[in-house]
Structure formats: structure tokens, C-alpha cells
Length: 280
Image 1 (tube, rainbow, N blue to C red):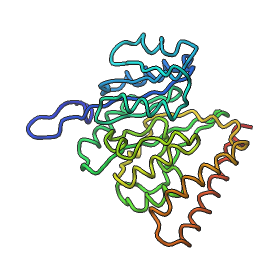
Image 2: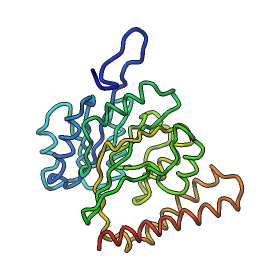
Image 3: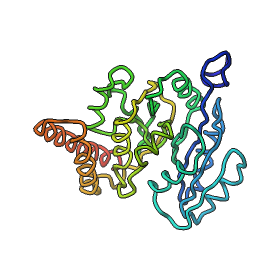
Image 4: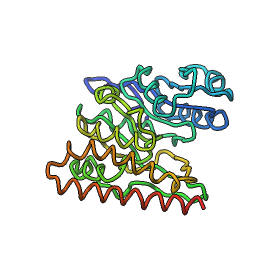
């Protein structure tokens, strides 16, 4: 039996949408091959894989080109950063849906098929499908992130409120499959942000589209926890910017907005402290 989403449908059913995978990579030759192998080893392969070589000097672009079709490489002449590389990749992509994958992350074989199974039955107002992610810490420990967050498909408003408190889209660097038109509608990633750019984008996307979550672990992200505590003030500054923009759009009452803001910042402090302990 074919995987869900594996074949174009007939008899009036939906046809599988086209999918572009976007992989930003800067000096990533040591691990990019593993990411590409996981994409090309999918039970349902994407229509194209766009690797954005962000000014690498270690042969990252050459490695990606050696794979041939459906991999193609877009090059930044100088490093512009992860966020800019993601924007470039989505802008260059041709698929109706864009799947994000960073060079140090991997997909499990059925990941794209399972997400496309949701996409082909979802209503048009759904703009993202994500899954649970196995997070691997620097100390060798691992955990599944975000399983306790409300399911957006069952209680959308509860999920949106949870999204105001934290980045509730698990595995932001490898999990999301995003409707490209919705991504472009909200303007893509804010390149002035570095630590909270994912969270900021999901909040803006949640104003124009709903999300769906697969409660299956279908990808794996390596967490670089070293330095998380040292960067706490920087993270909190960017989080305050994101909350300052988003809260007035979601919450009408000023006192409730302030309470949520304080709760969200406290959650970030706790996360950074936990990350620091994991790196020790």
C-alpha cells in the first residue's frame, strides 16, 4: 500500500501538491550530506531541494551540487545568516509548499509522506503542518519537545494562546511544512531577529492561517546548548520585541497582555537555564 500523499489522485480527489525543501547551509560540508540523504530517502520525495550556500568556504556548495537533481544550489556571495538564507530559499522555491530543514537536522523516512497525508485532506485555511521532533542535547540526552502543547487541530484558540507563551511549533528547524503563499503573504522571516525569528514568523502566520500537528516523532534536531545562558539577555531582548508586536494583535485587554508577557519571559529564562545545565 502506498504511503499517504504518495500519488496523484484521480476521480476528483485532490492531487498531491508540489513541495520544495529549503536547506540553508554555511560551512556545513561535514554534516550536510546526512541531511540531504534523509530528504532524498523519503518514501515520498520532494519535487526539488533548494540548498542556500550562505558564503561557505568549505565546499558546502560543491557537495550539494554533486547530488544532482532534484537538488539545486543558490549561492550567497558572502555570509548573510541563517534567517536570510531561509528567506532566499523560500523565494527561490517553486513548490506550493515549502519544507524547512537545517543542515544539521534530519528527517525520518516517512516524514514528508505523513505530512502530505494531512495536507491533501486539510481545508484551504491550513497553512502549516508540523510534527513532533526528537531533540538531542550536547550531553547526549534527548527529549520530545512540545507534546504537552494544545493540539492546534483540536483547539486552535488554545494553541494560539500557547504560541504567545513560547515557540510552540516543535522542531522549527526541521519540522514545518508551510504553504508558500501564506509565508509570502506575511513577509517571511524578519532578518533583524536572530534568536526569535521562528517564533515571530509563526505568530504572524497564525493570523492568516491555521496549523495542524502530527503527534509523531518524524525528525531530529541537534541542540547546541553551549552559551545559551550567556546569551540570555540577548534572547530576552528579542523576545520582548516579538511579544511587543504580537500581544496587542491577539489580546485586547492591557492587564492580560502584561501578565502573558511576564509569563512568557519567565519561561524563556527557565529554558535558558535548563539549556545551560545540559551543556555543562
